[in-house]
Image (cartoon, rainbow, N blue to C red; front, side):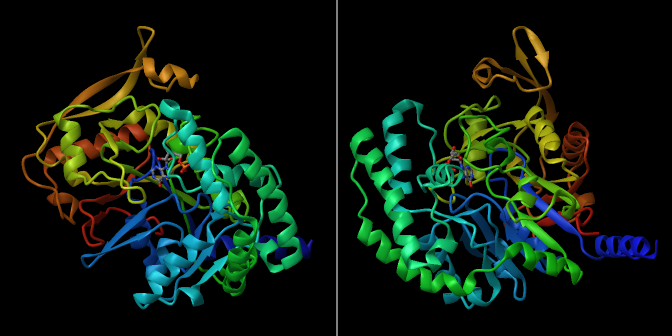
Length: 446
Ligand code: IMP
């Protein structure tokens, strides 16, 4: 009985000590998570990436200086914060070192503060070749991937063929595994895609050189995070891409190849679902999407151009123009469910400055019926006609406003309507790219 009591108190004290938050994109990516993660990092001791790879583009603007991170957690810009790349991430070592070296040149001690899981699957040059060859072969049916080898790397992970970072520590094992996987890749590249093959020896030499550099960074990240929690450290799990690009619940097949939803924060770091206390979903005050796939509220008119121009809607990684459209509350409600969102962060409110009339999509019309759920069958998306409600715009700019009460009344009511449709409160509103251009209504770590 006494051991039962002490067990109980250990459990209670643990959960009182640290608070762990997942930050995910609740649309199709590019919601501005990087800025929000960076802002919240003041209150955390460790930040972990848990899925995706260097297909992400997290843009941070601090005191006017812009940094784009693709693989290393955004928390790296804060001195003293432990950064972690969890087992769910697919790692291009070339991208990792390029990014780390760029940060070191700016005086950031990356190599002291970054740990990477040895279980991460490695993105090989042949994955990139396969990704690009496949996209070329698809022609008009291409997904519009970032061409970073993400999909093929995840395929190999699930197929149990992947080279994992741990394999780099044993030269013989590495050569054997690489030989096997490259045989397969080169067969597909040459025979199926009539594309150029990838050289085994060159790839091996590169990996061997990279192995030496990655070794000191490898760590059991589950244990590391668990120990941080025991010390009372707040953790943050930094999502990449967005909920609607999730390989299971997103707009398949126009998705990325990882689970982007909040549950993956536990899976992709080797922790359990009860280690997550809250989930912040980031949404733009409108919608964008890069690459192909359904986008019911997409605009092809002057308003779409306004959003693209004022919002600088070009991909941070590929530079591709993003498709733009009105805010889609049907999609948002879906994201609230898939991620059990506890609150919202709304970004780029200021991009709507100057528009007379705003629209929010509250339903999809399909087969003459209005529904507030997306169609179950993805191919029916193209038949959906969005149903909108209109909102008055605002004449005074919201750009740079840091106090909620200073927002124009119509901007406040637009946000209130977003909140009502989501069924969860808005914690943060972003009114410009800089860290300072933010309204914090309630701090997610409070
Ligand atoms: P992949 O992740 O490179 O395989 O690309 C699959 C789809 O996800 C494409 O439509 C990409 O444009 C999209 N995607 C991947 N990463 C991001 C991101 O960070 N932001 C927005 N879209 C992304």
